[in-house]
Image 1: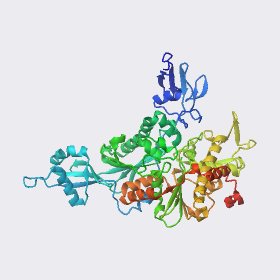
Image 2: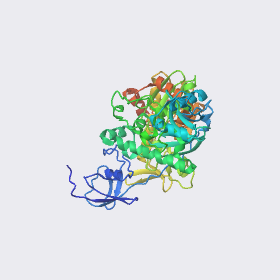
Image 3: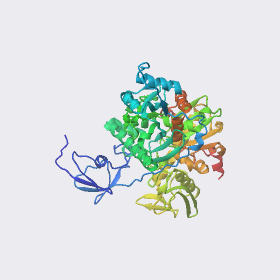
Length: 594
């Protein structure tokens, strides 16, 4: 047993939270006890270098490796909330022929029993539901307990909430006529989480909100989070994602003035690991060959089962996944793109942390995941951030003049994925970096500080040499994944008719710049279609439409999966793509001409 005799006081700035050491904890462990955020991409193993903090009077240390041996004041980096989301949903509504929400509220006026008509309460309710709406349904035991009192207090006039599924379920019975009915579309990303409040009567999105996933300090990618879960952290990972979602829900409800009791359902889209962690399912075997999840098709649950800020009776449906590394978020992307209904050959690229790619059409689909990393979402880049107010979204360099465009606001706070792509293309064009991403030290715009080379955009925003390498690795993984997937069925980019780009980055992406750095293929620009956050849009559609719910099940069942970790070609392709735009310039004729 570790000694508890030498207790030391640790104060964390800027929160001024303090704690005493008890059992030789590291600074990372102490910060987590106080619910303070410190990034630790490796899950506290000491290998990623992301958990650097500053100890006053001592300097910078790795929080996961430092055990306080005296009283300390520790300065933590500040991470801002992402705020209100900006998503495009209206263009996907036109594909929904009929609104049949996951949960619907139905007003019924029952005939009260008599000595002659002495049918039991439940049978009477089910009979009227069948006669008036054509719906057969069973009832939850919790609702059954209160059914007699509600029926009689309301003079047999009630609103029944029914959740659809293989077996319809009566999940609530309320007195009188209840008009309003809302649902939530939720995208649980590895890096960010987005929530949208939806009117289930009209299908319209009322409001939305997004923020960084609070699991990030416990591991930057899915593999590090699986590792953290295996080391006793499953409950904490589950707690963190719920603590991410609930404030988003509450913020939306407070802003709109609605009550959580009016929210009857949610559809959740997430990759396989995120879905497991959301439901507190052990993801251990996802990372061990042959890479098997507990389930790809999960039963609907009640909000009370996971503690979401909805009415306890509300139902939660997780979009079905495909494999260990292609989950419900990709299925939702496909629903949003409509590629599952097209005869043409389509390619879908989700520019998220896991870099999922799908090739196919209405007859067949093949998918893969290439672990691109969260660089384009602002993680792992010193001044990186998501595409929110204050982010540099586009940029040009001419001689020594730098021009940039911000998303909202007047002051640049950081640079988002689209800005990073522009920057990389411009740095190469101006010969500030070479094709391998190395800075030209002789260029007057390149600064050297403490052995680190950086390109300064503003006094508060810059990229350093490791940032550039990180961006190149990310774009290389995406391009290599596409090439490997296509080659597996003897296809090339030229054979593809439409290329769908999913992810928040797609809202601001400059295709020409993306081609110039080798992220996207050098094909006709007319092939590219942008669907933004397809996972959230797909969850929105599935929430509203039985047809889309059925489509999601069919997609997940028929889609095949290619495991890139066993494909030697992927590593060859990845290595070749670690140059701008590529080692083989014949793949980028328009860039070569420039």
